[in-house]
Image (tube, rainbow, N blue to C red):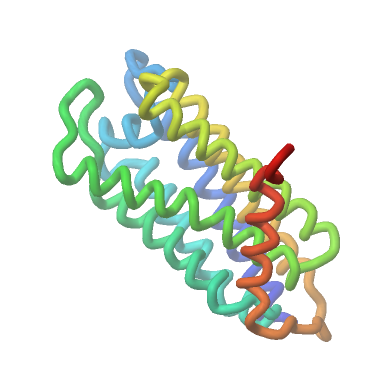
Length: 222
């Protein structure tokens, strides 16, 4: 369908623009900031309202562009809700800054942290749910990137707490790369869609979540 393809192409453009802005934002900050030990938010707070914050807003907008096309492709309400949570989390993290590196966390910094956590977890679960309606090669890529993202999110949580922030910047950037790749797969799949696609019945998302839980939970007695 033309509307679906156009939405995919527009979203791909937004994703590419967000990636370019994020790279520029890293190049423009002080050389004293270490990308391996500091998060993207630590870089963004040094340039409030700059290109990194803009990149987050652009990525959120690119996601929103995909929502009507995904509904036409058969995506259910739960997947759409999770994508909205991802977009809202990105926007909130862009608007509400974290604290400057080395300073104690205040209320805004805690809000920034937890909306970021919601966003980072919502997108891979949405990607897993979208694997079935999008189908084809996209299904394998989406499931693989979803599981990779969840493992990287766990690594980041470990680094943030018991790991004493060991390589937290590296963990976060690889996580962001995986999640942006997941979003790009969704957009590229929609951009390549032709008329006559078959929509999947609604209500299958919950079965998919149960399947996902079985795959990532070790069998008892193993």
